[in-house]
Amino acid sequence: MAERIASEAGVELCDVNITRFPDGEVFVKIVDNVRGDDLFIVQSVSVQPNEYLMELLIMIDAAKRASADRITAVLPFYGYARQDRKDQPRVPITAKLVANLLVAAGADRILCVDLHAQQIQGFFDIPVDHLYASPVIVKYLRSLELDNLVVVSPDAGGLKNADSYAKLMNAGIALVGKQRKSAEDVVANHLVGDVEGCNTLLVDDMTSTAGTLTAAAKLLHKAGAKSIRAAVSHSLLTEKGIERLKDSPIVELVTTDTVPQRKWDDFNVTVLSVADVLAEAICRIHNDQSVSSLFRVDN
Image (tube, rainbow, N blue to C red):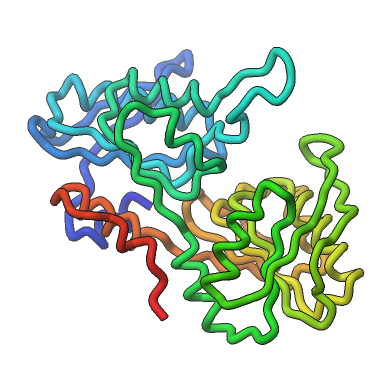
């Protein structure tokens, strides 16, 4: 991802050595001179979130001590974002904890894509530029020329996201009501909206075990949907998630390269790149220009 962003931005990627001490501690050395530079550090806190988060924090500290002028942490995927509030006793708010860690390490600015919850931006006392994958995904979906399209939110929390997709694609909207049994198991038991004979699109910010998506897809299939596709910004799919998708009525998963991708075992997956969007945002931030134009979807 960092290589693609650097290529799109027309700059060379900084040379960094990341190794481990014998006991597993992370060692970082920034090889190139960064004194006085506007530095952008790209790291998705995913797949191995504990390792990747520590790498990012230590790299920010190394850059700060190397006298970089400004340090922007570029997180295509913001890890630990699921726990963004206390919804039961004696649980943490890890999204806020990670925000505190990034600021304490020395980050001056945050650039991220599709946070799990919009309010996470308020966890920071430094500027946050929040980009969206929807312009890239919508551009691809429009090329499919799906008629009679209904955008479906797989749960109540994603209704605002589904509404934005529906407006961009001039489509209808529906909502699936779900009950979560555990972190991996979900039961979808209510459908609000008419999908009979329609092409449907399930939209979500992330998926790992695909429990929410596949439960909603089964309900849509039962309600007579003509076709079912899913679009997620961050695909963190496990082996169990891939198997669930293969056994579901979902005919295609559309996602982006914000996180490293797994092998799909012949499941129909379309991976779109957001490197050009991030590169454009980085160039605009460096030149003190507005990034709001990146939210537009060209007709």
